[in-house]
Every structure is written in structure tokens, then in C-alpha cells.
Length: 322
Image (cartoon, rainbow, N blue to C red; front, side):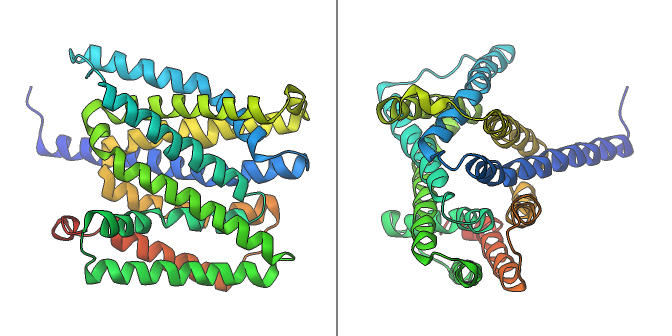
């Protein structure tokens, strides 16, 4: 039975709606990550980034294993033999698992001990601009006027958001140090994005992500074993509840939902929906952490979002040159 154009159109519309819902819900989960972390720190002042990150990875581990299993199952169902990894591939897996997931996560968790959730999210959101700058620096890719404008907008907005935090902080030194750590986290993840693009396409994004997270889990647990005693895990139950929320609702679930959203609506539309993330974090920070919100901060956030949108949604003709 042949489908009518109306049926086909309705299917496309419904798929888009479902994909948009997945992408938006994923952004809500990603936005909540810093909130869970800050709540855990507030609940137990002696808690540090090494211990908190170890708990997050322990609770996330079953989901990473399930992702790896699902990737192989999906390939088998499609009669596709998984691409075998060479020694060079495994070298990249180890390198990128270290810098892209372990180091970036550790620096981010550490930085959140010193800065607000809203500022952290805005700094991380500038990641596409860092990728562009690294591409220009190491791969001689020219920066077009459009991208130059995007960089100007993004970092002007970040400066305004930073000024907002400077006006209310009691410790400028901690603010500077925390911002440096989170920016280093964004830089580490940008290196992962640049170096991991080819291998991701070759072996599949879900399989690659699962392997990266498993490698990162090993690094995190080794770090914890070397730096902390087991007694460091003797924490209030509320901290464990926040860690479960961090692992499930701010790590595993949004990663899966974003993958499903990308399948249905594509990268451009997902990027547009993703722009709500920093704003959601700012308001969640105000709601759950009593972080102050100002017009200065919201103006800065708007500029950052506009600049990142110019880079992320640039025309194909620009994409080749940047």
C-alpha cells in the first residue's frame, strides 16, 4: 500500500517533534550536571573532585558497558561486522579517553569547587570556538569574517558573565583559579574533538563513546586508589543520591537522548536546541543553589550563545575553510 504525501509529511513532523524532545531533554540533563556537583560539595564540605568524580564513574559504569554491548548488538542486527581496532586505534582510544573524558571531567569537577554553575556552563559552551582556534593554529585553517565575529561575540559575552561573578565574589583568587581549571577542561575536550573525528566516523559514535568512557573510568579509579583511602567513600547518603543523579540523569541518559535526537533532527537543529543549556544552568543555579542572576550575566550569556551559534550553524561554504 502506497503512502500519501500527507502521511509521509506527518511521519517527518512526528519524527522531528520526538527528536527535538530528546535533544531538549538531553540539554536539561547536561545543564543539571553542575547543579548535582555543587549540591554534593555543599552537602559535605570535605568532599573533593577526586572522590566525587570516582563516584560518578562508578555509578555510570553499568551504562557505559551497556552502550558498548548495544553498539555491537546493533551492528549484528544490521549484518554489519564491527570494524576491528588496530594498535593505532587503541592508542587513540587511550589518548582521547585520557584527555577527552578523564582530564576534561577532572578539571571541570575541580573548577566547580570555586566558581558558579552558570559561569562554568558558559565557559564550557565556548568549546566550538576553541576548536576553531586550535584548527587555525595547528591545521592552518583560515578564520573567516563570520567566525571572527563569532569569536568576538563569544568572548565579549564571557567577559560580561565573568564581570558579573567578579562583582559578587568574596575571593577573586578562587574565581580566577576555578575559571582557569574549567577553561583547561574545555581545551582538553576540544583536543579530543579535533583528534577523534576520523576514528569516530570509522568505528561508530556510540561504540567510540563507550570505549572512551570505559578508559576514562579506569584512569579515574586509578587516580582515586593512588590519592585517597577507601574511607573517603564514607559519605552521607545525600551525597550518594546526588552522585546517582549525576551518573544517571546528567551523564548516561542525556548522552543516549542526544544520540537519538541527532538521528532524528540532525546536528544543526540539535545545536540550536543545545543553545538553551547555559541559560537553563543559570536558572537552575538560581533555583537550587541560590546563585544570583543579573542582567549583565544574561546579556553575556546571550552574546556567548549568539557567537557559538554563528560557528556551529555556519553555511557549508564556510565549514570547509574553518
